[in-house]
Image 1 (tube, one colour):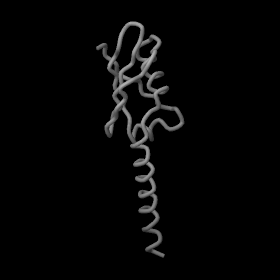
Image 2 (cartoon, one colour):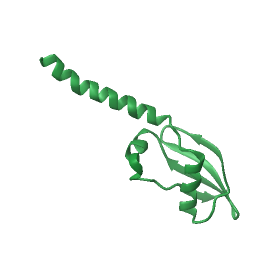
Image 3 (tube, one colour):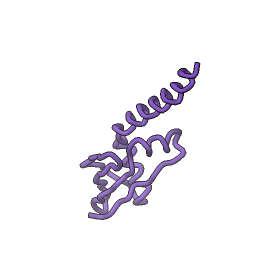
Image 4 (tube, one colour):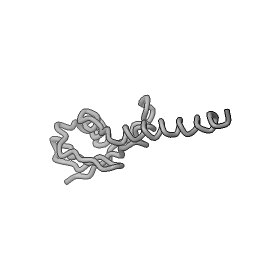
Length: 97
C-alpha cells in the first residue's frame, strides 16, 4: 500500500512533464502571430514572415503598409500552460526595421 501511494505523485509529475514538453514544441500559428502583432502595433498586418523559434520565444517579421517590424512573442511550454483557455494572451513586442 505504501508503495502505491508514493508512486501516485511521481506518475502525476511525469504526466505533467510530458504535457509541458509537448507544448514546448508547439509554435503559434501565423494567424495568431498576425493578430498579436496587430494588437501591439494598432494597425493591420498584411503578412507574417521569417518565423523562427527557440525554447522560450518566437521571432517573426510583420509587414504593414507603413513598413516591416521585427517582433518577438514569448512562447514555449510554460506560456502555453499559462494561456490555456485563452485567459492569458501575451502581446508581441515589435520594433520597426
